[in-house]
Image (cartoon, rainbow, N blue to C red; front, side, top):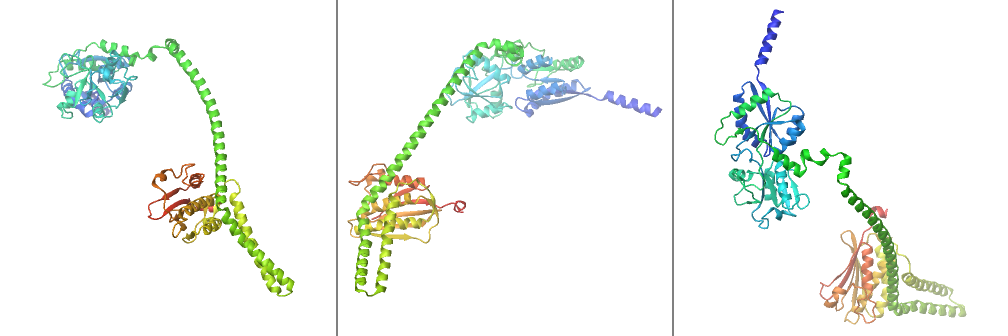
Length: 577
C-alpha cells in the first residue's frame, strides 16, 4: 500500500512538472507555410520566455480559426483587424498586443489594401475606371476587400453592382495570378504584398500599377485605402487572465532582431468599427440588429416596388402567353395552308410533266390498240373461212396481251397524276426506276434520245413515297431530254447504286450543260430557262429529296455531261423487320 501511495505522488509530481500546451492560431492569408515563417520568431521567443509552456502554432483561414475558438481548441489568435472585431463581438475576444512593425513603424497605421492593375491596361487610372470591370479578391468578407469597398463607395462605385467581383479564395497570391492570367482586370490585395512579391522575384516591378494610390504615412509600400491598426494578438474568452498576462508581458518584453516582428500595447480599433458600420457588414449587418418586422418596415418601399414589379411581371407573362398561343395557332394555320399549297403545286408539276409526255404516251398506247385491231380482223377472217381454230386462239391470246399492255400504261398514267397523300413505305428502288422509265421511254423514243439504265446489282430497300420519287425522276429525265435533244448522239443514263448507307440515283445527259449564270438559281421556285416552263420542277424535287432524308445536287465538273443525283437513305433494319 505504501508503495502505491509513493507511486501516485511521483506521477502527480511528474504531471505538475510537465509543460502546459499554449496554442496560438495564426491567420494564413498567404498559406500556412508563409504564416509559420512570418511568426516563427515570435513563437520561438515565447517558448524561451515561458519555459513552462509548450507553444504550438496553428495556421489557417479566418473561418477555420473561428471554428477552433468555438471548439475551445486554441488559446490565442493572431489575425487581421476585421476578423478581430468579429471575434470581439461574437466571442468576447480581447487584444493584448498589436503588431508594431511588419512593414512600417506605426502600429496605428499598419494595415490597408492595394488595388493593382496590369500596366498594359492604360485605361484604368483611377477607381472610377473600374466600373464594369472584373475585380479579383480573396473573399467578400476579407478585410482587404472591405477596406477597398469603402474607397469604391466614396468614388460612386459599388463593387457588387457597378463591377464584376471575382473571389478566388486563400491564399491571396491567387488574386495576382487571376489578374496576370487575364481573368480579372484588377485585384485587391493586402497592403505591402505587391512589394513582397517583387522582393521574392514572383512579380516584375513594371508588371502592375497601383490604382487609386493614397498617402501611406510611415508604411513603406503603396496603398489604395485608408490605413488601420496592425494585426492584434488576441486572447479568446476561455483563456485564463493569468496566462494572458504572462503572454502579454513576454510579447512586450521581446527584443527582436532586424526584420523580426515587434509587439506593442494594443491599439484602439474604432476605425475598423467605423468601417464595418459604414458598410453594414460583419457584426453590423442589418439582420443582426433588426427583427423581421423592423426589417420589413425599414425596406417597405423596396417591398412595394418589388410587389409592383411582380404584379407587372404577372400581367406581362399572362399577356405574352396569350399572344404566344394566338401566334402558335396562326403559325399552325399558315403551315397547313403552305402544306396544302405545296401539294397543289406538286400536283400541278405532275400534270405538267404528263402534259409534256402526253403525245408520246398516246402514240405508245396506239401501238397495242393497232395490234389489237389487226389481230381481231385476222381472227374474224379465219372464223368466216371456218378454218384454223388454233390461229384464232393464238390471235385472241395476243389481243389479251396487248390489252393488258395498254391497260398497264393507262394505270401507270392514272396513278402518277392522281392527287394522293404522301406516304413513305418500304419499297425496292429498282421498282421506282422501272416504273419511271416505262412512263418516260415513249417520250424519249419520239424525240430520238437513247435512255440507258445502269443498275449496279440488286438495290436494298428504302423508305419512300413511290409517286414522289417517280416525280423527281421524271423531272430530271424530262430536263435531261430537253437538254440532250438536238445533239448528234443524244443520250441519257439513269444509274442507281449503293454509296455510304444510301441509294444514290443519278441522271446524266450529254447536252450542252447549264449556263454558269443560271447555276446559282436552279433550285429557286419559279426560276426556269424554258420558254414555257413553270420553274417548279427542280425546286419541288429538292424539297421531296430532303423530305426523304436525302439531298438533290447537280454536278457540273464532268466535261460534256451534266448530272443530277440524289440520295435515299437505306431503311433501318428494325423498321424493315
